[in-house]
Length: 94
Image 1 (cartoon, one colour):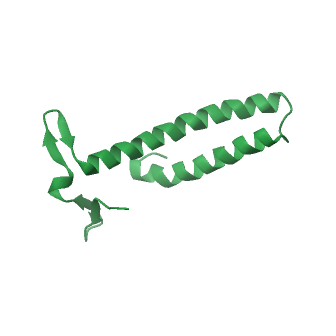
Image 2 (cartoon, rainbow, N blue to C red):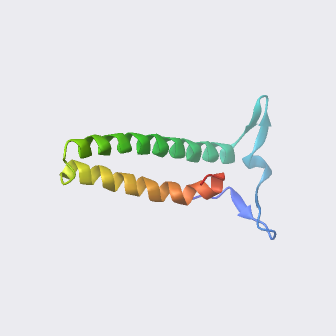
């Protein structure tokens, strides 16, 4: 993976000037593109978690907690949860 940031001696992060450049409406550049992709991933996983919760509840109501479908959805929910737990501190979310 190509990194766009480096950690400074005081624990903060910085990037090279060409990784973020001013545009008419804000900033653009490869570092901003990467940030946008990570934000999209977080939104996708969060929405998927909401849908998985609904699906699991529906399966519970049908008494299908021992089905392969239930186990698959639960495994996906746990995987998403671990990924989100790793990403949230970087975004100030808990």
